[in-house]
Image 1 (cartoon, helix red, strand yellow):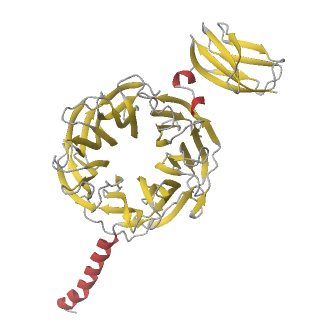
Image 2 (image 1 turned 45 degrees about the horizontal axis):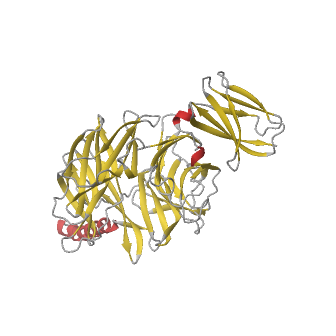
Image 3 (image 1 turned 90 degrees about the vertical axis):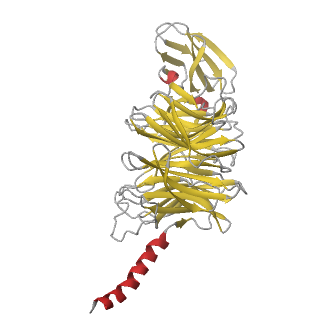
Length: 514
């Protein structure tokens, strides 16, 4: 066979292979379902795990949805959670240190079906429920969300809550500490010491290299501002940063990452004139503003930045959207690589929609995976791209990968109506201070006597209230913090034992007298 014949044979093969690779991306996930992607990770087996909100109607969400794909984005299995009636969805899906799946989300099953409560969930390596925790507020008239979940070195978790229905004008952001089984230990309400802050919202949480917690979002304080809160491991605020550069009339933050040595970058929007624009923020570990960068200049109309990922020591990937000069509601969704000063190195348009992509991750082999949700045929669908560092569609992997190797049997796709074993009223979770201030009440149930123990101290008292909140008895505690009450004449029923220290409420315990 001469060279010309070889060329004639090979050219069609090369062209077909090129077309196959180029046409594979993006992968469309959830076609005709109407779904929004909230979370994306590269799984331990080099596939991808996505957490999503599924919509039965445009008015509310009905399912939380986990999707597992292979390295080429092709579906391996999916898990749907809910019954299609009560609202729910997933905001954050991760693998923990033993490769179980942990989830932060929201569920309406235990309230009015349209009012969401924060949800935290753990699945084993086969996608089966290990524990499920719902944090509920009786009488809440709005939606409360579980936004993020982060595993801690001791195997417990820190969760980020965003409130709309609980004390709407005051408590809006909280951290809840859970043990390894999802049991809430304490809760800390943030942004409570500054009366100039209101309508604060949180969208991201990371554990820093110094093992502190960094919350990112926005607040109103003489206008809308990008907002960051750094706390210690007990949830005590170390500092907060209300972005105050006079050139940024308003701002918001969607994602935050730590580069190294306590240097942080965040993506969001800054308002210049009437419209917002994609912005990169940079600050240090002491809460000092270092710089912001208007990524695309100030001539665009409408837009902002959302996903953010560190690619190398000198480059980042960021996703954003922007409107056109003629129509701010119509625009483009793009991804860009930028240097650490915010200068655009390369960019690529993903869709002709004025909505940013949802997530960006760097893969084990240095590639970039991007997700977004866009309208296709009248429904929201998830788009998944895999690119090289030049933002070109990556080639397909043809060698075999072994997926879900930690599960001893094939994982099947199914629908699960959650039944959460841990169901806690938000008001019954102690603050960190109260958690460190124990209140032990025993026996429980009790018949003739009730023992109360707390730490030694002056000016402590307990107040006994009926289950309906009617005061029943007040007793001062001795310095030892130990007291035995005669309850032989108490009516049968449920009581609340409330501890006060120096006149301040500390915590309470329910006890049944029978």
